[in-house]
Length: 460
Image (cartoon, rainbow, N blue to C red):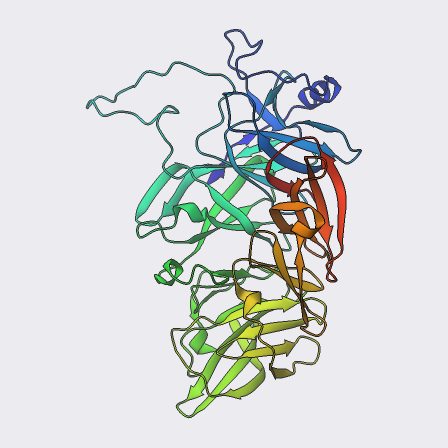
C-alpha cells in the first residue's frame, strides 16, 4: 500500500527559511483563489514544540517551537511557494525516532477554507469528500531534517473494516527496526469492540514509495481492562520479530504465527521484552505443571527458516493464574528487567540470573509512572511524585508545590537520567520547562511568558 509522498521542493524550504520568523499567514491570508499546496513543516533545528492557549477563535491551541538557538517562534506549515501557514487543529504530536515526527489531525489538513457542497454517485449515494468527517483520523510523518511531510493513506484492515483512506496512528510507543522501518499501532482513542488494537509496519527505505503493512492484531478483549496498569501489547525487536496479544509471536521472516506455549511448556499467556540493544527478543511466562510451576525466561532467535527458543533462566513460583498479565520493565541502571508475575523478580541481562525481589515495586507498572535511566517517578497527586531509585529501590517523595511550581506535563527521554516537565511558576506567573533528577533536585531550563502550556514535545 502506497503512502503518497508530498515532495518538499528545495526552493520552498529556502524561501521559508529566509522569511520573517513571525511572518505567518492565516489559513486564507494572501493566497487569492489558488489553494496552497502543503509540502512541509518548519521544524528544522527545533528543540521543543509546545502548545499554548490561543487568543484567537480559529483554534483553542496555538503551537509554537523553541529552536536550538533559543528562538521562540510559531510552528507553521510550509507551502510549495515557500509561505508559512500557522498550524492549527492538531490532535497530537510525537517525536518517534531520530528522523521523524508523527502528527495527528482529525481531518486532512486544509490550508484555506473552502465551501464544500455534497457530491453524489450515479445511485444517489453521498460521496466521501474532505468535508465529511474522517472516521479513523489522519496521520502525517514529518522528516525533521528536510521538513518534508508524508501523508499516511491507503488500503488497510481495521477491525471488521476493509478501509481505503486516512487513519491515525499512535506514536507514543513507536518502534524502529535496524532497517529504519517504523511499527505503530492504530491510535488508542479508536480502540473498541469493532476496532481492536492493530500494529502497522511502515516501510521507509524508499521515501518516494513508502508502504504500510498490516503486521499484527489483538484478538483478545483484555485491552478493555486494567487501564491503570502498563502492559506492552506489541513488543518488536530490531529485526522485526513481534510478540503480541499476550501469547503470539510473528517472526521477521514470513508471516507464520507461533504461540508462547511452543517455547515455554505449560504456558498459555506471558510477556515479551527486548535486550538493551533491542536485538534480542525474550519471552517470559509461568510454565510447568500443577504444583510444579516455574517463571521461565526464553530467548528467541530467527535463522530465516523459523524461530527457535532457548531457555536461559527459571525460578520456582507458587503463583499461577493463566489469564493474568505478566508485566516487565527495563532497569537501565542495572541492565536488568523487572518482572511482575504475582511477585517481583529481577532478570539480569548480563549473566542471566533470575532472583525474587522483596521490595514493593507495583508503582513501576502503573500508568502514572515515568522511568528514566536511574529512577522511576510515580505521580500520586497533582504536584507530588514518589521517586524510586533503580540502584537500590529506595523511595523518596518530592512536592513541586514547595518549589512554587504547578505541574502540567511530564515526559521522559530515551537514555536520559532526568524526568522532564512543564509547569506554571507562581513567583513570576510564567510557564517553565525543567528537569528532576533521582534525588529530587529541580532545575529550570526554559522560561516562557505564557500562562498555560497545554502540551510539550522535546525533539531528539
